[in-house]
Length: 256
Length: 256
Image 1 (cartoon, each protein chain N blue to C red):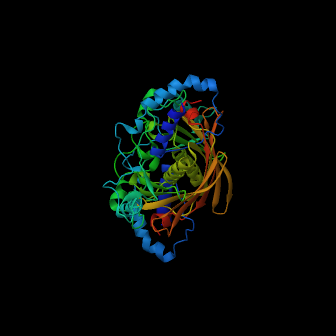
Image 2 (image 1 turned 90 degrees about the vertical axis):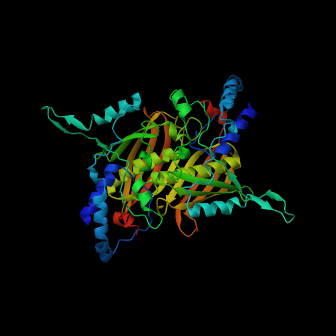
Image 3 (image 1 turned 90 degrees about the horizontal axis):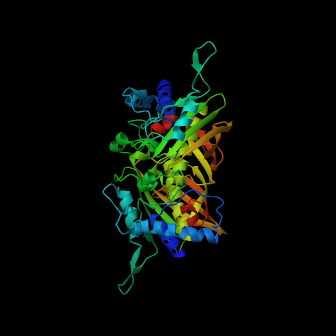
C-alpha cells in the first residue's frame, strides 16, 4: 500500500500538478486501508505508468517558444548537468521537471464523477495541445536552495482584459508552481490558501518568470512565497503567499 | 472619447470578464488623450461591436448541462422577468449576463503582442468550444441586493488533483465572478488582490454555486466577498476576499 501510494506520489511529482485543499483529512483506519488496497493497486496499474505509453512531455521546447523562453530554458537546463574539472558529467544544482497532461485514469471522485469524465480527464494547465496557444511553461527545481523557478509564456487563449493575461490564468500558474514546490518539499499536499496581489498586468504573448521559495514549515503546514516578474526581474507582476497542508493522498484518491 | 470608452466598458460588462490589476495607473494627459483618441476610435470600430456578427452566447443552456445546472439556471432565469397581477411582464430582481469568447480584436499590449496573437486572442474561460469540456457557467446579477451568483459546472479538462478541479480553475472562476460584479458596481476595475481559502476540493464534473457580495467601497477600491459552495449550500469549497481598483480603461487599452 505504502509502495503503491509512493508510486502515485511519484507520478504527482512528475506531473507537477497540485491543488485545492481538503481541510480536515482524517487518517483512514487500518481496516479501511486493507479493504481499499486492491482498489488503489488497480488504480496504480491503470496509471499511464510513469509512463509506459510514452506520453508527451509538455515541458520540452517546441516551435512556439519565443526567444526569451528559449534563452531562459537554456540558462537553467545547462545547469542540470555540469562538467567536473576532470571532464566527467555530474548532476548540477537544477533539475527540470517533466510535465504531462494526465493524472490517474480511474481516480474516483464521489458520486458526481462519471466514468466518461474520468477517462477524459486532463490536467487543466495542459488541456490544450495546440503549441503556444495557452500555457507554455517549464519548471526547474533547486533542492539545495529550496527554490523553484518556472518560465511561462502566455498564449493567446489566456486573455482576460484586452491584450493581457487573465488573473485566473496567472493564479493557475502560481498554484501549479507553488503546489509542485510544496510537494517536493513536504510530500502530498493540497492548497489551503493563496493570497495573490496583482501589481501589473502581463501582456498576452509575453514570457515571465515565477520564482517560488520556501518561507517556513510548521507541522503539516508548508508556507511558500512566489513572485511573478518580467524575465529581467525589473517589473513585478504579482506577489503571493501560499499555504499548503500535507494530506493522506489515499484519502483523496478514494473519495473518502 | 468618453463615449467610445463607454462602449468599450459596455462591452466589458457584457463579456463578464476582468482581471489583474495595474497598480498605479496615472491619468493620461490631455495631449496624450487627444493624440490617442483616433486609435481608440479605430479600436472601438474594430470591436465585434456588441455584437454585430452575433457571436455565440456561452451562458445559454447546452446539451452538456447536467440536471443540477439546468435546475439552478431555471431557478434564477425565471426571476429575470416576472408577471404582475394584471398579467403584464416586467423586469424581475435578477438579470442574466451573456458571455462571449472575445474582447477586443485589436487591443494593444505593448511590444510583446504581435498582430497574430491579437487576432487569435480568446477569453480564457471561454477558450474551449467543446460543450461541457471545461468551464460551463452562467452569471446572474441582483442589482437591488448588490449580489451576483454564478452556476458553474466543472468539465473534465479542469483537473488538478485526481478526480478534482484544479485550484487555479477555481481561482479563475472566482476572479471572473467577483471581477464582473465589481465592474457592475464600480465601472472598469482591475483585480488588485485575491485571498482564497480552499476548504474542500470540488469533484470533477460536479456543479457548484459562487455567490459574490459587496463588502464595501472606499474611494477607488471595491471590496468583494465570494463563497463557493455545493448547490444546496451545505458544503463550503472556498472562501475569498477580493479587492478591485478602478482604472482608466483607455490607459490599459493603449498599453500606456
